[in-house]
Image 1: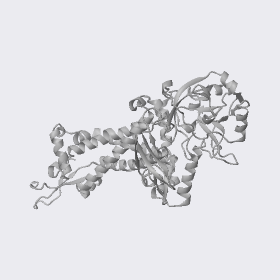
Image 2 (image 1 turned 90 degrees about the vertical axis):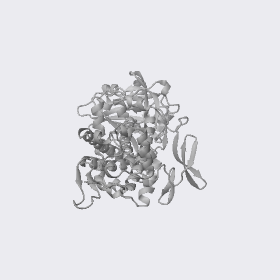
Image 3 (image 1 turned 45 degrees about the horizontal axis):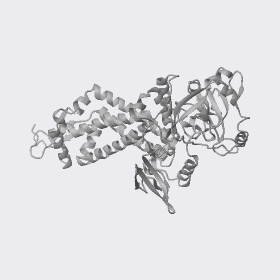
Image 4 (image 1 turned 135 degrees about the vertical axis):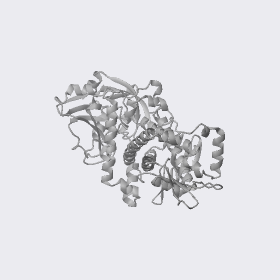
Length: 257
Length: 290
């Protein structure tokens, strides 16, 4: 969850639309066939990393001494949707995580349900796509345990995370933040639904009441303000079909690099 | 750099000999490298612009008190703005190039200017796509070059300096000759001089591999594969800083390299890197006899 959208939108707007003066490189950048070739790089990165990674290799875990003194909050700082405002007003008492889609039994979990399940605490490094890093201590329930409770239906391949933040203000909901990971990352021991950070309840700026941690990937995969998880066989029909808010805006779906 | 063909008629005074200096593999990998490094640099600067600060250690996020020891930013300056490059406690006004530069005639906050980045406008996603594609291209090309250099004995034959070449006396002599822009001629130009050898070894075996390794160290996925790389470079943010410094050193090399190409016979040099053939110019006082 990162990237200064206002600045990005402004610069793209002023850069392309207003002037229309493009250098040769910019013409190449905007050519669909050039992009089709360049996107092969993502395929190569993902397959090379997955080949070397195996499924269970852990991200580096740090010690308390390594914690960032201030963990930068990025992306949405406080969601402005009505749904979220009501949740904040009731101190998240009525919040429930819906888990459905291609599962055997769809279920919803209250915060108490999640906190009653076995938890994992990990001190990891968060790497924003912009280039900065911060180290934080995250506590939460492994996603795998939640998936075991609902049971996956045959053919389920991805977990899609729907969030409460309208990152890009929109009337039709197309600006709502969402993300997706495949089952390799979903079952990874460090992939947790985190409700605690640095020994306290997760703050609003960091995604209260619940955020995803998927430690072997870049920050924008770590969706905040989770409302619903849907198991799907394909994310082609969700959003613009690229598997996430930033993916729909040109970023790689596989963000291990 | 072995086979010799004479470039002059038999009865004439032999003015020059033409040698086959660069093998096809070296020429192809050289030019692909030029292509890759150009795109890597420009897309890399685009990525840097998304967070124009450098740190040392595991973390760093421009959130006080994280100390960034290099920052390239814009500050308000009356009605306008100024570009400021900070290195440690030193601040330099770099308006027009670093920190703030013109986009369509208007001063805009951006670390590196539009003419230096791909794309010219701010677009991190595209910068990353280009960077990683050409990173793969570069690594594969480098791997082909390394394999060729070892198997063909190109490294040992042409790049490995001899003991004599490494003596301080010899090196001092070559530095002095280069400083006076007096480059080897005749038979001496048949092989790389020792400064060339050291420069090429430094770039090919130290700087470029360092770029790849520090680049990989910034990848959270790769960190899980080889966590020890984090320890080698002292953390992800240190690796990012070394990546930046190493890139700067490569740019320094490229400038010197191009200057040497221009000063020591641009057409001859260009021809040899395109066709492979290099003419040995006769030494001033004695001509090469056949």
